[in-house]
Length: 93
Image (cartoon, rainbow, N blue to C red; front, side):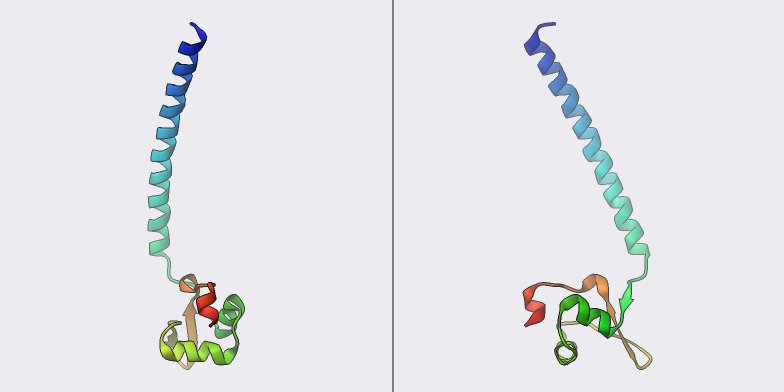
């Protein structure tokens, strides 16, 4: 087998392997998303949100009041879905 033919055969084999890996990755991604969908949201306390976002207590409650940070009440306690928090600069303003 000449060198160009060998390289061509190796390239084709690599492409087939990459295609198989992409398909497997897609299946695994779907499986992980399904598992995550079945889990309840991780709820955090106000102190957790302030630490994650780097904001103070007054800013947190102002943002809860204007609706930019969603809040769930559990009795008299406030809980926040930590997966939905954003740490971008817009959350700090």
